[in-house]
Amino acid sequence: MMWMALGGFTLSAMNALMRQLTGELPPTFAQCMRYVFGLAVMLPLLLKHGVHHYKPNHLKGHLLRGFFHAAALTLFFLALPKIPLTDTTAIMFTQPVFVMIGAALILREVVSRDRWLAALLGFAGVGLVLLPHMQASTGNWSLVMLAASPLFAASFLINKALTRHDRPEVIVLWQNITVTAYMIPLAMPYWASPDTRQWFMLAFCGVLGTLAHIFMTRGFALADISVLQPLRFLDLLWASLFGFLMFGALPGDTAILGGVIILSATLWIAHREKRQ
Image (cartoon, rainbow, N blue to C red):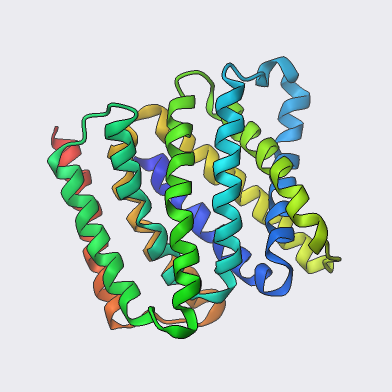
């Protein structure tokens, strides 16, 4: 569970930086470059251990996962600069419900009543966060963000399945390779010339994104994916923190109440799993 919580924190930090970048640069270009730098982060390891060390055992699975992840990211980054960071994270909290359904139906995991209740309680907290913001000015972009959620869920489910065949570092390397390949045609028409600060931020996002996915993939390898999903609700707290530090955005009363409910769901499921 520690790996998943650490991955969520790192991913929230990256999303905060990417929200600023996608307001300054074309979203598809920024997304593509984030993965180019993510791939560059892993090149020293590739050179050190050799190509054979990172040869996948299930290439079709990696290609399929990259397709779903690239599609989800395209929707995500198009909507990211249009809605508050806290709302972005809250909408993404619909993922655990989709993941748990997939884990039960596809991966044949046993999803306990406690896990379902924790996910649904956290989902109720998400609703409290989103409700005040579902208006004409941001509502359509919120729906675009929401459409990315089941695609991300499909990517994470394939990721979990791939941990049965490949090591976490192999999975993350091939995620960077496939997403970059899928994104280049979408980024080319919107190619930009970032300044020095923007290049540095893109490179840092590449580092953060790669670390986040390594952390989460390690978590997937150690536990059922349905056990880990309620921990993603902690991301709302991280998003609120980074939103305040970077954009001066304070969460409203409903966001605070939703965050308390989400945190309660997270602590409850962690306590129940520890007892078992």
